[in-house]
Length: 313
Image (cartoon, rainbow, N blue to C red; front, side, top):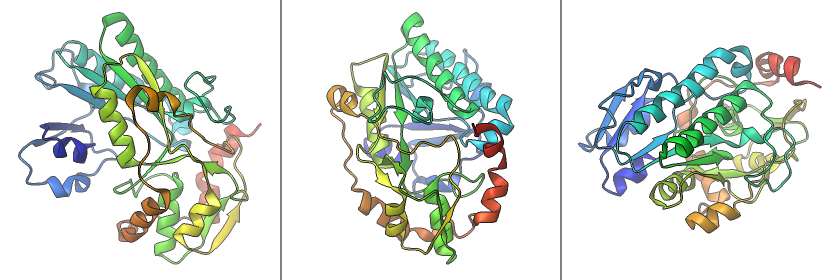
């Protein structure tokens, strides 16, 4: 997002607690005078804060991710993703911003949504991360409705791309596979690998946020995905490693697939980054995973024990 905004000659202020974010991700902008980085937790934002003075757009990405840690630490997730969002919208309400765009999650649709999944599909969050992100979205939309704060919300499907987090809990398949490939370990494919995911490149995601900010539309929710689900086996083939199959996890969707007709119609957005090219870019940058944890079947079983305990039928 910072890359895109600087390319468009905006002055950018980043607020990040650096709990999971890394300053290294902005290293190419280190000498950029139009970029300010403030190390702070958005939960500490006060309505009277001067930080948002003279700010045009707010892109609210701050929060905690990951499924299993959210089951183990639900209060922390509610605080970061709900209370943090409350702090952001209240500060925005007391400033003269033109638009706030919220980073929501497609996990709100639950493990068995109708596909392709439209924005009016039933909301069935299955774990605290999904619930907290949906509650954050509800806060944003409510502030838009009640206080006339200009807002939109983007429900992101399976985003991938450069500078993704390389440390922390077991999670997104790209990071797991790339670390395994770099260290010549088998790629751990869950189930039989035929499950599909709607992968969307981070550059396309950033462009959707920009269009949602510039648009005259307000108070809307938009699904953003690649629009063409890909099998996990296909991803493993593109990364080109040996494969070992591990047990399927309960509560995981067999298919994620965004219905993107609304975002195409309202914002004239559609994905532009070819999946094969996007994967090739990440493989080319595989050294970024040199210090990432290298998961195997045994360590994954340990890390996901809570998942099986609470999400099994």
